[in-house]
Image 1 (cartoon, chains in turn orange, green):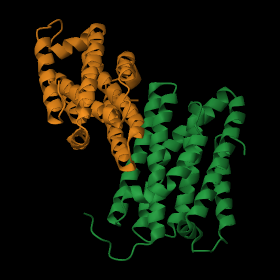
Image 2 (cartoon, chains in turn green, red; image 1 turned 90 degrees about the vertical axis):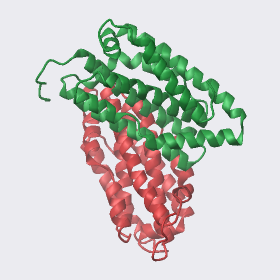
Image 3 (tube, chains in turn yellow, red; image 1 turned 180 degrees about the horizontal axis):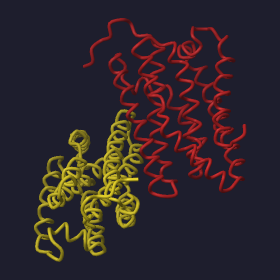
Image 4 (spheres, chains in turn orange, brown; image 1 turned 45 degrees about the horizontal axis):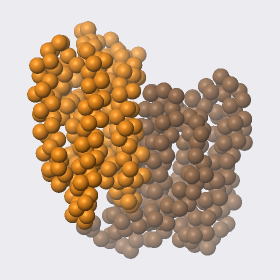
Length: 220
Length: 220
């Protein structure tokens, strides 16, 4: 049985850890499935390894939730529908779509969690920052996308459209979540009820996303 | 570029490492897919974590193959058809079938590789022994199967039939592989052309498998 925490636990912290944990669990699931789209065994192995790193992060977050006295599945339950909805509506049809989704989608989520983590107390702040993405795999994804565009410039248009769809679906599910989970939305905004930071947050996320698109030759 | 090995590399060693590596890669793939059959999030997470450990083992074997001068995908290529054939013909329909397959199937493969590893020189002998299964997850699988049989004794019959099918399909693919890869078959038998050890090997594998079945309440 886990030790009870010393001070009362902020429900917004449990909300956030539950969200990130379920995000990792689902990212594992989708990347493992997407690995089957790989054109050869070495690429399939790389995506499988990316997936395995997500599950390691999941374990750290789940352990922390248990320590805080909340079973991980209870903390994750509120997000099952929204995150599943995002993935179901953005099922990659081929290897490049899968990679683009892993590269751009994870990066937006990471930027978002990095911003939110700044409002957390230690040790949760450090934990969330540490489970964020390993840049090693980003380099692999960037190279694959660039090479594919170099080989066939028409690919850039198709993947640019795909990236816009990913962002659209992501924003739609995020908005739904924010409405359903006021404590979490409060943490994201830096204080309950304070929505002043929302436009700035969206602008920051969008700017970084656009830069990542440009880096691999996609246009917004 | 990897350093060239000091002494000529035994092709049977590359054959074996390629087989084990592809086995791990495919086990990852199937367990990740099977995790979706889990009845709840905690169980889904456990199977996802089992899958992630397989990919860590894959990485160690792939690194060793590269060190020996053979790209992992070249060493794995001969096994793609047989192993895929095994998994395609034993697709679990539910959570208990998935767990039984992971528990019994992996254990037979581990027993087999443990026997073969004894014929290898170091460091490959130790490497193969180290990537063999973690007993931590076996305990989880055993408990799940026992609990399900306790709750509904009819489950024992269904899973016993399923286990017999797994063994039948496994033996059929193994026989096909042995015929196609004489160097590997030689290593397995302890020397090229020497088939005297085959009945003993099969008997040993069968005895251990029967004991594992009995342990969870299944009958042979």
